[in-house]
Image 1 (tube, rainbow, N blue to C red):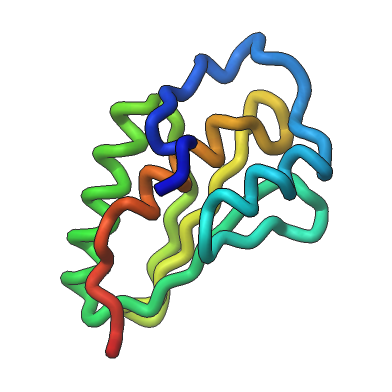
Image 2 (tube, rainbow, N blue to C red):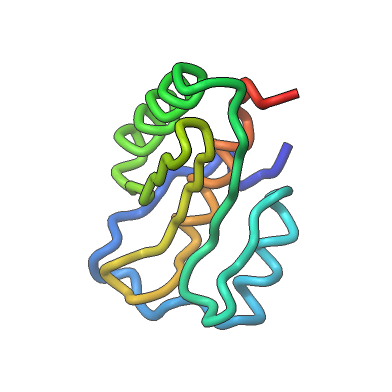
Length: 115
């Protein structure tokens, strides 16, 4: 388990500058199965869920984490079970530690994946 999942997100306004590519890549190594977009401004993870309802249940769990951290991902559900979660800190126009904290907490969930 990543130590990131034990942290709490800070308010996004006034937390400084977006993370450098080097720092973001270092934090990325702590969260399995996430990728960083080429421009370094967001991290993402793709899932192929077992079913539409499995995707909806997982989205609900992700939403609970997002609300508790006050840091909200973009969630895309397409083709009824392909799910993509994207995290960025909009207030900074790039990545902050908050994105990695939420990603680590999402990684602690157990998605119902297509076998």
